[in-house]
Length: 94
Image: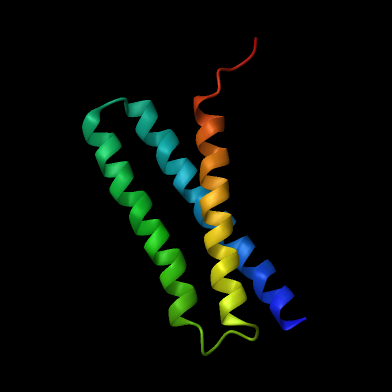
């Protein structure tokens, strides 16, 4: 059960980070410039590093499996970033 709770916590943490990345993308697309896209790319990398780094740095204090948590966070971060990217480029239906 320790692994299940760790995976769920990691999935939630990764989903939160992916949502933050999505909001960064939305703001950069609205500005529509090369500089804003470059800044958004750097900001997204920083969010990814902070999200995974936080799990790593808190590994001794987590009440559940560190391995399951970091894997869950990485999976959610990867998959939801793809989902949000498709959502961003998908044309709106009228």
